[in-house]
Image (cartoon, rainbow, N blue to C red):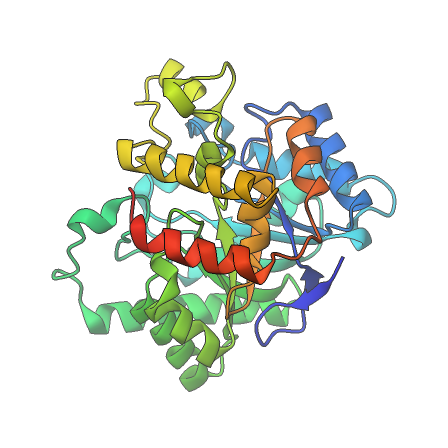
Length: 352
């Protein structure tokens, strides 16, 4: 598998990343460790987690459990040097720190907490999970209102957080830094403030990106290209929607939508499972079949045709799902299929 460098950092990773957000909830520890082993066999050495995982749902009592399970795997003799680990500090959330926003001091303490749970002395990529000023991620774009933001307060906050990250980097606790669920303006300002203060520059941004959700394609892509920032795309299969398993109102047992519904959620995949989203999914499925492609493999291969640096984060509840994903890696998307995807995107530009 190809190796790529995260932005302008010295951190080299595999071109595909393994996501772990179900580890400790839908995915038990033994299965989680088997998934990491299987990913490594396929050349995937980059693993992403977060202090708030597992999710679906997020529970106060399970905060940090995914890092702990990954840490148990890392504790095996020789495992730490085989992989690159990314994790994240939670943004404002009542589940973590009683909703307190992070600052430089909290970042320093959170890094130490993650290091302890991960049973390691270093984190290869440390990310800010949510901006403290708010975000349009997860369907908040439909009524996004940035009018109450304070520019100077935001810049002061960035300088303080970057100071904490710089201290951790100097101490060897983290190697590179990144963002998540950020906007184009936010990414540009983080880069500006880092340059002004001599702090570490953002090497990556982890935002949602898939055939069905392409808000990244314009302003964010321009900033990332010019500032040398790598996209880590989460939900490249639209939380499973692009697999086609939810067609005809299906609700497979144990699926993300089913678990969400049984735990009191709406079961709509975070707002993705809409009539327009299902229609677009069906259209992409037909397109894949017409070209002799598996729809899952097409969705991942398409990401690697983009005109900017992107690393898809693939995740699975079960090992057989991961095997299916891995079976399609390394396949190049033909130009005629790529052009057909572009045409279809114009028909379904923002289906949820």
